[in-house]
Image 1 (cartoon, rainbow, N blue to C red):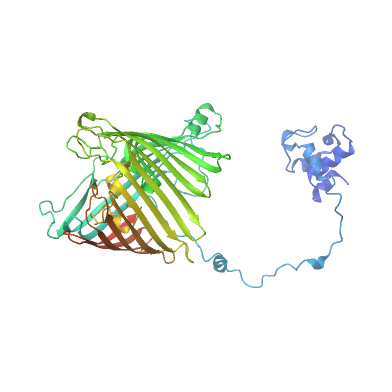
Image 2 (image 1 turned 120 degrees about the horizontal axis):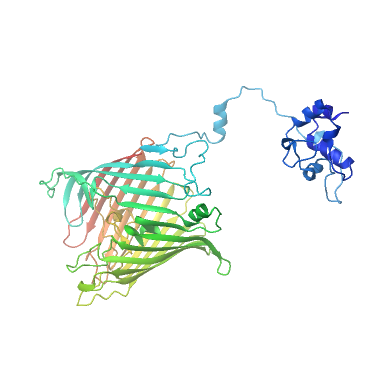
Length: 548
């Protein structure tokens, strides 16, 4: 039988050449000389591999060593044996008597289907999560770190109406607006420039209209506050990827870094949550078999300007963001079947003419699930070493212990009872906290979380010389709504440094629901009781948020 006829009957060109190689008993293979023009044309049309063989052009080349395996007897364990085929061991092929219904096939997977998504306000370059290939891009930074530019503008707009009476007794009904704009310029897969701007906010002052209440401001009605500079503007990237592009050699290491007016957040914002002028870099993805650490990261950071902290005061005894600088390191460790977070930062008072408020800030936190029933995160912040001198009062000293707990119920994703507690001594401070970040107890419960929009009232969130807790239940329905109910208490103790001198109690509610894929409605309410001469506090608010 000729080679051409074998090809027509389905034999692979690989098998034919392997046969020829075997027949030649190791002699050089030159099947091309034995073919007539018709056979040669048929064989050349077969898909072939990459190594040349005499008698064929380059596109018809093959790897003889690989092709010989097509006819080589299969290797198997000598202890195995062949058995006769039994067709009764197999069921017959399925029959499809009904008309194919694609909708019924979707129901097999829980009825899941594509959902509408919110697109960015502006997209230039490749689409965000668009289909198809990204494209080759441009080798400006090197072949191994190509630029595929993309600019997107996204964010959200918030509108809220509220009637509040805060712990100081100020009672106001108001409407307020806020706009959070993000501009992300993606350069490479690891490098970008990000800007965040709040055009309707100037510092802690929001654009608002105070329309009711005995303490409303009638002189500014409405009050328009315009932000004239971005809240953040920074560059971030990976030095390993940049070096790979410039040297045209892949690097075995990564070194993420950022610099500019940059946000930084550690321990869910408890130890640090601020935007400042500085820089940071991370040594990622290390491990230690000797210490039983499966993975750990170390982040080094420093800030030179705009460090927001009440721990550093000026000559008038007031907080001054221009007074402080900082340097520190934070560690993140997967260890002991839990997650360990540590950190140390030195806060430096740059102007010691009005007292030296420099100090050391230490933290540690450990998160773990116990017995499959309770998720716990225990955290500590310690401030030491501040000595302002001249009879001045310390602004950062003492400690804060936090215990955050959630019960794992029979509905672990949607029904979440929680109980969070703290003990604070003296004036424990975070390393830095932006005004919009709220107090250090912000994550403890609803009663300590303001809205950064209408001045929604809270219990004392500073933890200075107080202890207390918040107990509540969160229910998420079908993961499409949220309802939270909570009770909370603040108890002063050793009251030399605390912001409150009498007990505080509060009951809080929250409900939110998306009405479309871009609009969310949220409602909050709080009623708080203060022992002593202070009035009760209360608030109710309704917010509409549009995401784009």
